[in-house]
Image (cartoon, rainbow, N blue to C red; front, side):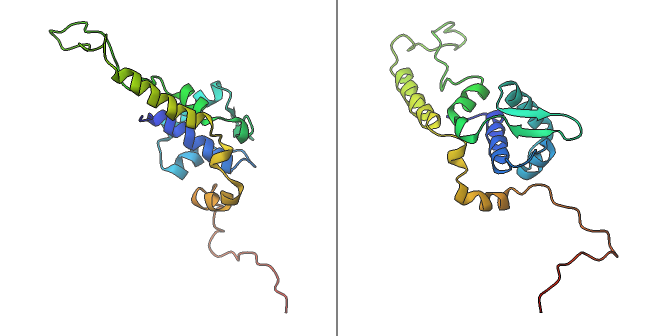
Length: 168
């Protein structure tokens, strides 16, 4: 099964938000962290917000937060809600043999059943996995290192950087 970019970006967004659950994050910082299109991400955020998975607020003090505890967000549900078509193959009856549309085996093919079982097994694994499972506490520091939040701007040149006093 190959997931669409929309679903891929939705899962990455939830992972980023789970790593930075202590604060609101922005679309801009998520796009920068993964080096993905901000325009495409806006559509993903809109959908996640409509699905009730994230709380999106505009304006000063706005940003994005997970709407649920990561233990309550099942990856299988996210995939089902962000994928438009979960079929592995498009088995249509032989509608027009002259144009090559449809399948001449559709009424007796066993492949469709096998692929349905495979998709069921795939979704079972995703249904048993939560966002929290993908963000184990012992890996948070490493994940934050790979996906840091916004960097603080460097002090203007010519100004001293505050330092801590040292013990002597």
